[in-house]
Length: 237
Image 1 (tube, rainbow, N blue to C red):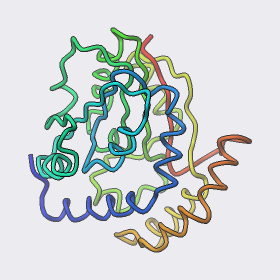
Image 2 (cartoon, rainbow, N blue to C red; image 1 turned 180 degrees about the vertical axis):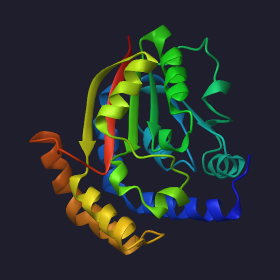
Image 3 (tube, one colour; image 1 turned 180 degrees about the horizontal axis):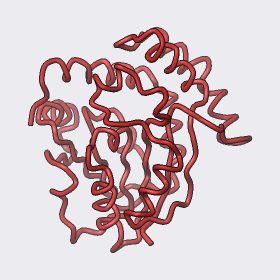
Image 4 (tube, rainbow, N blue to C red; image 1 turned 45 degrees about the vertical axis):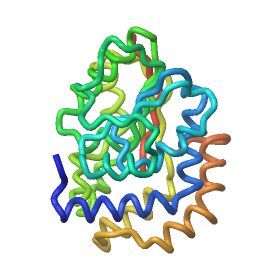
């Protein structure tokens, strides 16, 4: 299924912002790094900006990426022709292959039946007692027009996501809010000012000058009480 031009253009804004967020991408993989080894499935790879980072991790023996949008798959295959990319959804993955980890970054919020998606993750991970590395937007009170543009059905609270993970069959090893400053910046720019695109210069400045310090404080000293996103590590029961 191909995206409409309007949605595809909006996705390009999101991809452009992620491209500028080099420290942000690196910090995410640092959070998940200990669990990314062996056979790893990347769900919703888009055009492969996280994929390229994953392929550099020495512990991953095989990385497979899945993406429902044909255009994104074509773009990724042209960039990484040796990499295995499956066009489809999680239901198209072979349930007999053991997976040591599933990584899903900013994907679950795009899926209306998110509980079923989590159930599918759990079933795929159970044979090898693999790990789910999950990252999603958080806090419904900052859901803004740009969230709708991106195709987000929701932003999660910690309690809501933890309950859904448990219902899907997971034990939650770690769940915490992520990027406190990003919460307030998102609220101001997209909820109050109702901007419909990222300012790439602002993204670059935040990523280089502000985020590294904030991440260090959150990761090593104290997890924030709220944040722009939620980060999760979970295993099947």
